[in-house]
Image (cartoon, rainbow, N blue to C red; front, side):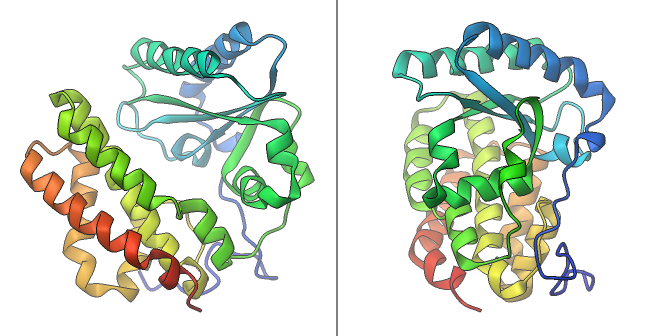
Length: 266
């Protein structure tokens, strides 16, 4: 853990050094990615601008069956409600088709004008530093470079309060299988938000959950047992609803109350 010191993941000028690349995408995922892009393009032949991969597949450290394939589709205009439903349905269908390879295929959506608006620089930073273009015109060339700032940290994970309340509501009525999936997703979200709290002050850039966990623990050692528990849940989905809800309620409430103030500390 000693290597996770100020400057890690940054270049000589203090800018984020992206750890994703099209060359890092494992070959085994290429047919799945190509098929996914084809299906998105088939649904929206005149609206699709570009598609990006982010997450473990883009970093090259995805684990078959356990890892997700995370896609971001940028459209030329804003999708309406029915069109967003089609994207969600496609995500479900693709996930079923490729369940032998990935845990889930997620398709996030954005529109071109929103992404290109300078006021939404955090969307631009997300594209520049976390995404790999696999279809269409690569917008990343328009953006960056970026330094680790409180604004970047807050924009990436400052939505924890809203996500927390939505997740708790869904967990309480979820089926057994949905409960496991939601629990693992929210465990990931908690760890990423923990890390974002200390991102600016640590000046450590990493997108790997294990490294993000260790960076956070350097500043909040008393949270280590909770972080380790979340890591276990990500590896093997929890089954105790009572235990999960109790921990999520406690940590979600704590993060919602402390996140922004802590994230702004340097």
